[in-house]
Image 1 (cartoon, rainbow, N blue to C red):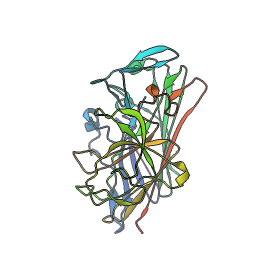
Image 2 (cartoon, rainbow, N blue to C red):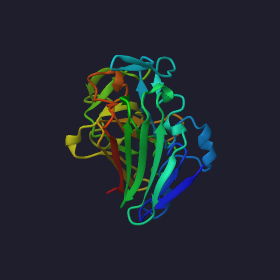
Image 3 (spheres, rainbow, N blue to C red):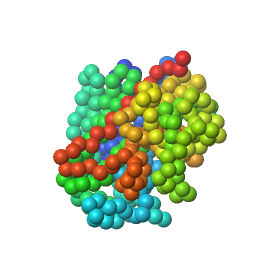
Image 4 (cartoon, one colour):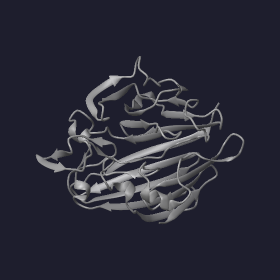
Length: 302
Protein backbone atom coordinates (compact mmCIF):
# COMPACT_ATOMS: atom_id res chain seq x y z
CA UNK A 1 0.00 0.00 0.00
CA UNK A 2 1.35 3.42 -0.99
CA UNK A 3 0.86 6.72 0.80
CA UNK A 4 1.16 10.20 -0.72
CA UNK A 5 1.21 13.50 1.19
CA UNK A 6 0.69 16.91 -0.39
CA UNK A 7 0.55 20.24 1.43
CA UNK A 8 0.26 23.98 1.08
CA UNK A 9 0.21 26.80 3.65
CA UNK A 10 -3.21 25.71 4.96
CA UNK A 11 -3.74 21.97 4.51
CA UNK A 12 -1.62 18.81 4.73
CA UNK A 13 -3.38 15.90 3.01
CA UNK A 14 -2.40 12.22 3.06
CA UNK A 15 -3.95 9.84 0.51
CA UNK A 16 -3.64 6.05 0.06
CA UNK A 17 -3.64 4.18 -3.24
CA UNK A 18 -6.01 1.64 -1.65
CA UNK A 19 -9.54 2.94 -2.16
CA UNK A 20 -8.11 6.37 -3.12
CA UNK A 21 -8.63 6.95 0.60
CA UNK A 22 -8.13 10.27 2.37
CA UNK A 23 -6.25 9.04 5.45
CA UNK A 24 -5.41 12.37 7.13
CA UNK A 25 -6.15 16.05 6.64
CA UNK A 26 -4.43 18.47 8.97
CA UNK A 27 -5.25 22.16 9.44
CA UNK A 28 -4.35 24.60 12.19
CA UNK A 29 -7.17 25.41 14.60
CA UNK A 30 -7.81 28.86 16.13
CA UNK A 31 -4.98 28.27 18.65
CA UNK A 32 -2.49 27.30 15.94
CA UNK A 33 -2.58 23.61 16.87
CA UNK A 34 -2.41 21.08 14.01
CA UNK A 35 -5.79 19.32 13.89
CA UNK A 36 -6.69 16.23 11.86
CA UNK A 37 -10.24 16.92 10.65
CA UNK A 38 -10.99 13.43 9.26
CA UNK A 39 -11.50 10.17 11.14
CA UNK A 40 -9.09 7.42 10.08
CA UNK A 41 -6.57 4.77 11.04
CA UNK A 42 -2.94 5.53 11.79
CA UNK A 43 -1.90 2.16 10.29
CA UNK A 44 -2.79 2.00 6.57
CA UNK A 45 -3.23 -1.81 6.67
CA UNK A 46 -6.28 -1.42 8.91
CA UNK A 47 -8.20 -0.04 5.94
CA UNK A 48 -8.03 -3.48 4.31
CA UNK A 49 -10.58 -4.77 6.83
CA UNK A 50 -12.50 -1.51 7.39
CA UNK A 51 -16.25 -1.76 6.71
CA UNK A 52 -17.11 1.92 7.21
CA UNK A 53 -15.61 3.26 3.95
CA UNK A 54 -13.47 5.71 5.94
CA UNK A 55 -12.26 8.41 3.53
CA UNK A 56 -12.78 6.18 0.49
CA UNK A 57 -13.79 6.88 -3.09
CA UNK A 58 -17.17 5.19 -3.52
CA UNK A 59 -18.26 3.65 -6.83
CA UNK A 60 -19.30 2.47 -9.31
CA UNK A 61 -22.53 3.71 -7.72
CA UNK A 62 -22.51 5.53 -4.38
CA UNK A 63 -25.51 5.03 -2.14
CA UNK A 64 -28.32 2.51 -2.43
CA UNK A 65 -29.91 0.81 -5.43
CA UNK A 66 -33.19 -1.13 -5.08
CA UNK A 67 -34.54 -4.29 -6.72
CA UNK A 68 -31.14 -6.05 -6.78
CA UNK A 69 -30.43 -4.53 -10.19
CA UNK A 70 -31.41 -2.09 -12.93
CA UNK A 71 -32.36 -1.98 -16.62
CA UNK A 72 -30.52 -0.24 -19.47
CA UNK A 73 -31.98 -0.44 -23.00
CA UNK A 74 -34.36 -3.20 -21.84
CA UNK A 75 -31.48 -5.35 -20.57
CA UNK A 76 -31.61 -6.34 -16.90
CA UNK A 77 -28.36 -6.18 -14.94
CA UNK A 78 -28.48 -8.05 -11.61
CA UNK A 79 -26.14 -6.71 -8.92
CA UNK A 80 -25.21 -7.92 -5.45
CA UNK A 81 -27.69 -6.96 -2.77
CA UNK A 82 -28.32 -7.66 0.87
CA UNK A 83 -32.00 -7.72 1.84
CA UNK A 84 -32.80 -6.20 -1.55
CA UNK A 85 -30.36 -3.30 -1.17
CA UNK A 86 -27.19 -2.74 -3.20
CA UNK A 87 -24.87 -0.36 -1.33
CA UNK A 88 -21.81 1.64 -2.42
CA UNK A 89 -20.99 -0.35 -5.55
CA UNK A 90 -21.29 -3.88 -4.20
CA UNK A 91 -19.15 -6.33 -2.28
CA UNK A 92 -15.91 -4.91 -3.62
CA UNK A 93 -16.59 -1.37 -4.77
CA UNK A 94 -14.03 1.28 -5.70
CA UNK A 95 -13.23 1.92 -2.04
CA UNK A 96 -11.86 -1.63 -1.76
CA UNK A 97 -9.69 -1.58 -4.89
CA UNK A 98 -6.10 -0.55 -5.43
CA UNK A 99 -5.79 2.58 -7.57
CA UNK A 100 -2.82 3.75 -9.65
CA UNK A 101 -1.09 6.95 -8.58
CA UNK A 102 -0.89 8.79 -11.91
CA UNK A 103 0.52 12.15 -10.91
CA UNK A 104 1.79 14.00 -7.84
CA UNK A 105 2.41 17.74 -8.03
CA UNK A 106 4.18 19.31 -5.05
CA UNK A 107 4.48 22.91 -6.24
CA UNK A 108 1.96 25.71 -6.02
CA UNK A 109 -1.60 24.34 -5.91
CA UNK A 110 -0.42 20.77 -5.18
CA UNK A 111 -2.48 17.77 -6.27
CA UNK A 112 -2.46 13.99 -6.47
CA UNK A 113 -4.30 12.19 -9.26
CA UNK A 114 -5.25 8.50 -9.09
CA UNK A 115 -6.89 6.23 -11.65
CA UNK A 116 -8.81 2.97 -11.66
CA UNK A 117 -10.12 0.84 -14.53
CA UNK A 118 -13.34 -0.91 -13.57
CA UNK A 119 -13.74 -3.75 -16.06
CA UNK A 120 -16.90 -4.71 -17.92
CA UNK A 121 -19.32 -6.55 -15.59
CA UNK A 122 -17.27 -5.91 -12.45
CA UNK A 123 -19.83 -6.14 -9.62
CA UNK A 124 -22.45 -6.63 -12.36
CA UNK A 125 -22.03 -3.21 -14.02
CA UNK A 126 -21.72 -3.06 -17.82
CA UNK A 127 -18.83 -1.33 -19.59
CA UNK A 128 -15.15 -0.72 -18.99
CA UNK A 129 -15.12 2.43 -16.86
CA UNK A 130 -11.94 4.50 -16.74
CA UNK A 131 -12.06 6.56 -13.56
CA UNK A 132 -9.83 9.26 -12.12
CA UNK A 133 -9.99 11.15 -8.85
CA UNK A 134 -7.89 14.26 -8.23
CA UNK A 135 -7.33 15.77 -4.79
CA UNK A 136 -6.17 19.36 -5.23
CA UNK A 137 -5.26 21.98 -2.62
CA UNK A 138 -6.04 25.57 -3.52
CA UNK A 139 -5.57 27.98 -0.61
CA UNK A 140 -7.73 26.83 2.32
CA UNK A 141 -9.77 24.52 0.05
CA UNK A 142 -9.62 20.85 -0.88
CA UNK A 143 -11.08 20.12 -4.31
CA UNK A 144 -12.15 16.55 -5.08
CA UNK A 145 -12.63 15.96 -8.80
CA UNK A 146 -14.04 12.65 -10.07
CA UNK A 147 -14.08 11.91 -13.80
CA UNK A 148 -15.05 8.79 -15.74
CA UNK A 149 -15.50 7.48 -19.29
CA UNK A 150 -17.15 4.26 -20.44
CA UNK A 151 -17.41 2.09 -23.55
CA UNK A 152 -20.97 0.92 -22.71
CA UNK A 153 -23.92 2.68 -21.11
CA UNK A 154 -23.60 2.28 -17.34
CA UNK A 155 -24.77 3.89 -14.10
CA UNK A 156 -22.07 6.06 -12.51
CA UNK A 157 -22.25 7.90 -9.20
CA UNK A 158 -18.97 8.61 -7.42
CA UNK A 159 -18.33 10.33 -4.10
CA UNK A 160 -15.85 10.64 -1.27
CA UNK A 161 -16.79 9.12 2.08
CA UNK A 162 -14.67 11.13 4.52
CA UNK A 163 -15.91 11.39 8.09
CA UNK A 164 -15.29 14.93 9.35
CA UNK A 165 -14.62 15.90 12.95
CA UNK A 166 -13.40 19.48 13.26
CA UNK A 167 -12.41 19.45 16.93
CA UNK A 168 -11.83 15.92 18.24
CA UNK A 169 -15.10 16.03 20.20
CA UNK A 170 -16.74 12.78 21.29
CA UNK A 171 -20.21 13.98 20.34
CA UNK A 172 -21.57 16.02 17.42
CA UNK A 173 -24.31 17.76 19.44
CA UNK A 174 -22.52 21.12 19.75
CA UNK A 175 -21.43 21.44 16.14
CA UNK A 176 -23.23 23.97 13.95
CA UNK A 177 -24.70 22.72 10.66
CA UNK A 178 -26.23 24.42 7.64
CA UNK A 179 -27.66 22.53 4.67
CA UNK A 180 -28.54 24.52 1.54
CA UNK A 181 -31.19 21.94 0.87
CA UNK A 182 -34.89 22.90 0.93
CA UNK A 183 -35.91 19.31 0.13
CA UNK A 184 -34.90 15.76 0.95
CA UNK A 185 -35.66 12.32 -0.48
CA UNK A 186 -38.15 10.35 1.56
CA UNK A 187 -36.71 6.91 2.37
CA UNK A 188 -38.23 3.65 3.56
CA UNK A 189 -37.14 1.37 6.41
CA UNK A 190 -34.21 0.12 4.29
CA UNK A 191 -33.14 3.73 3.58
CA UNK A 192 -34.14 3.34 -0.07
CA UNK A 193 -35.77 6.39 -1.69
CA UNK A 194 -39.53 5.99 -2.10
CA UNK A 195 -39.39 8.39 -5.07
CA UNK A 196 -41.05 11.18 -3.11
CA UNK A 197 -39.23 14.52 -2.73
CA UNK A 198 -40.30 16.31 0.47
CA UNK A 199 -39.88 19.85 1.81
CA UNK A 200 -37.71 20.16 4.92
CA UNK A 201 -40.11 22.79 6.30
CA UNK A 202 -41.37 21.95 9.81
CA UNK A 203 -39.20 18.82 9.93
CA UNK A 204 -36.05 17.80 11.80
CA UNK A 205 -34.23 18.06 8.46
CA UNK A 206 -34.55 21.85 8.26
CA UNK A 207 -31.00 23.16 8.53
CA UNK A 208 -31.45 25.98 6.02
CA UNK A 209 -30.12 28.33 8.71
CA UNK A 210 -27.03 27.47 10.76
CA UNK A 211 -27.94 25.76 14.04
CA UNK A 212 -26.66 23.19 16.52
CA UNK A 213 -27.04 19.58 15.38
CA UNK A 214 -28.26 18.60 18.84
CA UNK A 215 -29.89 15.15 18.96
CA UNK A 216 -30.65 14.93 15.23
CA UNK A 217 -28.98 11.97 13.54
CA UNK A 218 -28.89 11.65 9.78
CA UNK A 219 -28.50 9.10 7.01
CA UNK A 220 -30.43 11.21 4.59
CA UNK A 221 -30.27 12.20 0.90
CA UNK A 222 -30.82 15.95 0.52
CA UNK A 223 -31.63 17.92 -2.64
CA UNK A 224 -29.22 20.82 -3.15
CA UNK A 225 -30.62 24.17 -4.29
CA UNK A 226 -27.77 25.67 -6.31
CA UNK A 227 -29.64 29.00 -6.59
CA UNK A 228 -29.00 29.63 -2.88
CA UNK A 229 -25.37 30.43 -3.81
CA UNK A 230 -24.08 29.04 -0.56
CA UNK A 231 -22.92 25.60 0.37
CA UNK A 232 -23.46 23.14 3.13
CA UNK A 233 -21.49 24.24 6.20
CA UNK A 234 -20.16 22.73 9.42
CA UNK A 235 -18.56 24.70 12.26
CA UNK A 236 -17.01 24.08 15.66
CA UNK A 237 -16.74 26.78 18.32
CA UNK A 238 -14.21 24.60 20.15
CA UNK A 239 -11.61 24.49 17.35
CA UNK A 240 -12.77 27.68 15.66
CA UNK A 241 -12.81 25.81 12.35
CA UNK A 242 -15.58 26.08 9.78
CA UNK A 243 -16.00 24.05 6.58
CA UNK A 244 -18.20 24.90 3.61
CA UNK A 245 -19.03 22.27 0.98
CA UNK A 246 -19.81 23.34 -2.59
CA UNK A 247 -20.52 20.94 -5.45
CA UNK A 248 -21.80 20.59 -9.01
CA UNK A 249 -23.90 17.59 -7.93
CA UNK A 250 -27.70 17.63 -7.42
CA UNK A 251 -27.60 16.01 -3.99
CA UNK A 252 -25.69 15.29 -0.82
CA UNK A 253 -26.15 12.34 1.51
CA UNK A 254 -25.49 13.56 5.05
CA UNK A 255 -24.51 10.74 7.39
CA UNK A 256 -23.82 10.81 11.13
CA UNK A 257 -22.55 7.40 12.30
CA UNK A 258 -23.81 6.00 15.58
CA UNK A 259 -20.48 4.58 16.74
CA UNK A 260 -18.33 7.74 16.82
CA UNK A 261 -18.49 11.52 16.45
CA UNK A 262 -18.30 12.47 12.78
CA UNK A 263 -20.34 13.63 9.82
CA UNK A 264 -20.11 12.72 6.12
CA UNK A 265 -21.11 14.96 3.22
CA UNK A 266 -21.41 12.58 0.26
CA UNK A 267 -21.88 14.92 -2.71
CA UNK A 268 -23.49 12.90 -5.51
CA UNK A 269 -26.48 12.11 -7.67
CA UNK A 270 -29.59 10.72 -5.98
CA UNK A 271 -29.51 7.17 -4.58
CA UNK A 272 -31.44 4.65 -6.69
CA UNK A 273 -31.56 7.00 -9.70
CA UNK A 274 -31.13 4.02 -12.10
CA UNK A 275 -34.56 2.78 -10.94
CA UNK A 276 -36.29 6.15 -10.50
CA UNK A 277 -36.96 7.74 -13.92
CA UNK A 278 -37.84 11.18 -12.48
CA UNK A 279 -34.49 11.45 -10.62
CA UNK A 280 -31.53 13.10 -12.41
CA UNK A 281 -30.01 10.91 -15.12
CA UNK A 282 -27.34 8.55 -13.77
CA UNK A 283 -26.49 6.64 -16.96
CA UNK A 284 -23.16 7.55 -18.57
CA UNK A 285 -23.00 6.94 -22.32
CA UNK A 286 -19.93 6.18 -24.45
CA UNK A 287 -18.39 9.47 -25.61
CA UNK A 288 -19.58 11.33 -22.51
CA UNK A 289 -17.44 12.31 -19.50
CA UNK A 290 -18.76 11.99 -15.97
CA UNK A 291 -17.60 14.97 -13.88
CA UNK A 292 -18.27 15.35 -10.15
CA UNK A 293 -16.42 18.28 -8.56
CA UNK A 294 -16.72 19.33 -4.93
CA UNK A 295 -14.91 21.94 -2.85
CA UNK A 296 -14.33 21.66 0.89
CA UNK A 297 -13.45 25.22 1.94
CA UNK A 298 -12.06 25.87 5.42
CA UNK A 299 -12.06 29.08 7.43
CA UNK A 300 -12.30 30.28 11.01
CA UNK A 301 -15.64 30.80 12.75
CA UNK A 302 -16.57 34.49 12.91
